[in-house]
Image (cartoon, rainbow, N blue to C red; front, side, top):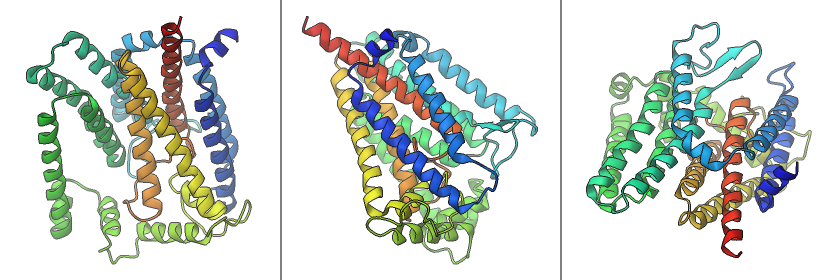
Length: 391
C-alpha cells in the first residue's frame, strides 16, 4: 500500500478528475434507466462493477515500470491484433452479429469489444515506435522521416483494415484519427505533413461530393451499408425519410433542449431516447441537469485535455515515449468527446462511439481506464524526474 501511495503521489488532480467522471456517469446512467428501454437490466450496478474493476486495474498498472510497458509495446500490439483476427474468425456462437457488425465476443451474459482495448495497445506501440526511431536517427532527414511515416502508417492501418471487415466504420475512423494525430505531432518534416493533409482533404472532398451527388454509386462502390448511408444523409440534412436516425436526432435535441438552464432533476426523465445509457448519455445529462450540467461535463473533458497537453509537453524533452502516450490518449478522448457530443446536438453524424468514462459499457470503460492508468504512470515518472532534478 505504501508503494502504491508513493507511485500515486502528485497525481491528485488526475484522480479527482477520474472520480468526477465516475460520479457523473453513475448518476446519468441511473436516470437513463428510468426510460426502461431494457426491462430487467441494471446498468447502474454493472457500470459500478466495471468502474471498480477499472480502479483495481489502475492500481495494478502503477506497480509496473513504465519502461517495461515500453519494451513490451510490440507484444501488446500484436496480442491486440490477434484478438481482432480471432474475433473475425470466431463462430456466431461466441461472436454474434450485433447491430449489423461482428465486433463483440459474447460468453454467457458478458460481452467484450476487442477494438476498444486495441486502441490503447495501438497508441502505446505508436508512441514506442516514435521513441525508438528518434533514438536510432538522432540526425533527422527526409529519408528518416519517410521511414517513420511508413512505420506509423503500417501500425495504424492494420487494425483499421481488420475492423472495417467487421464492419465498424465509426471505430475505424477513430483509429485513423489517432494515427493521423500522432503522425502530425511526431516531428516529421512539415513538407511531408502538408502533402498528407492536402491528399486527405482532397480524398474526403471527393468522397463527400460523391455522397451528395451520386449516393447510390457511392454506396455500391464503397460498400457502405444502407443504414450508414442514411446516417450520412440525415446528418447532411437532405434525407426525407422518417428513419431511425432522424428519430434519434429529434429526440436527442428535444431532450437536451427541454433541460433548459438547470435541467429537470433526477427521476424526472421524460423524453424517450433509444440507447440512452450508451450512445446518447449526453442527451440524458442535458435533460437532467440542463445547460449547466452539460457545461460541467465539457469543462471536465477540457481540464483532462489540458492536463494531457501540459504533461506531454513537460515530459517530452526527457521521455518522448511518455509524451506520445499522453498525446495519443488526448486524441482518443478528444475524438470520442467531439463525435459523441456532436451527434447528440446534430453537428456530427450518428455513430456508435461512446462518451468515454461516462457512457455505459464494460469494454469502453476498462480500455479508457487502462489508458488513464498509463497517464498516471507518465505523471508519476514526470514527478520522479522533477524530484531528481532538484536533489
